[in-house]
Length: 211
Image: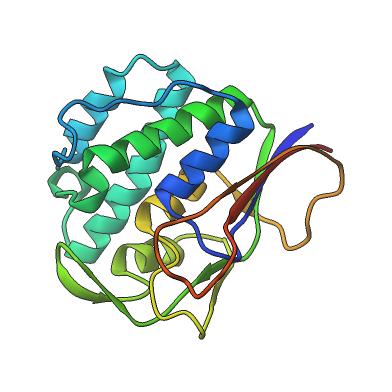
């Protein structure tokens, strides 16, 4: 059985998850989204964009599942429904490319199971399109409330370690919590680093195992 294990003790973001999955899968082609930097702001717009991408049907399903997680969280935060959610950071071309890329690489890996460690976030506040917001950010908190994954706070890190797109990738791909590292043969390991200063913490690690 092929298993992907994500070590999220140093957090997770969309670009970190995509980078690690891309290395594990060996997929060479980057996802290019038209209108670099432009916000694809509604869930329906994102769905159309995904369905028009030249990726496998399985990858499209995974990408839409990931964005459904984000849409439900944003709807909960803003007291609306998913059809009326307006994406900001997660609707920008770079974020869309990271999510579609992660979905494509996960589909290419054909893992039987995806497991994840405890997920560590920081504290404090960050500035985003909505202004200054607390960490964990509201969308992440909304996802946490509906997830069986395990979360901890690193009191020594005063910034965001878990982004909405990163957590949505884990949830949307169907990851389940596993405290211990899985027993089995490690086929490949990938480590990705984010852009935030988290006080010298290590990167986000992903493993492909045969168990």
